[in-house]
Image (cartoon, rainbow, N blue to C red; front, side):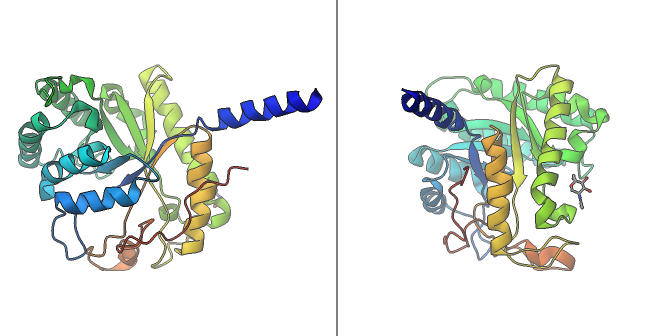
Length: 309
Ligand SMILES: *[C@@H]1O[C@H](CO)[C@@H](O)[C@H](O)[C@H]1NC(C)=O
């Protein structure tokens, strides 16, 4: 009897542990030679990702015809897209809206996990919080007027923001959080110069501060929250005490990404594939081509199963 009870308890624990945070990947939109990916290229990418996730995030709709090319690939492969809308300068924002109004009517609302206005716009100081809030509201009303291929309004898709955790915790940025249906926080222990011994602690601390500030700004814990970007580079120069390597990326995967997901937090990893086309410029830019969990040739660099024992 005692064993039966114990077994039931263990089963319960195991099924609760399955309420793990979702996993998704940031996806580059260019091939190794710097040309734009086609629908066929995206299909190949999504087939590689499929055993691990059904969601990808991209930064813009019009650049590289991303929405036009990725949209049909996502529908064919059963994926959802977090679609970035690049809001600056205004001429670019108008191009984004053009791509959205041209392509969303051919796709389904269920293909979109959310629309993200800007990416680290606050961090780069491209926009202040009030301006970003205004654009979130503008995009929400714009997209509400578009119907999908089944006649459903895109008003059902959430509109939010993604920014660096340390900007999201600033009280003066609360208006941007308040305007958003959902929020994503980016945090890179690598760029904070952390040792492997402190990288997961630092990551957890950043994300918990961001989550708490977002919940306070929204006046509710009932808000969709994601880590929008995190990861560890597998090669390139050290940044203070942070060292790129496959072993360290593998360790951060387990102790940072898997651990945070085990607490139920959704994580979008930066990034799916190495982007060989990125220019090797000064300073630490040589890490920029080594953030992929897969090489640019689609080979997985380390195992992705979480050892949550
Ligand atoms: C570890 O991370 C925490 C949170 O980011 C930070 O406050 C602390 O200074 C870090 N410790 C070391 C030794 O860097």
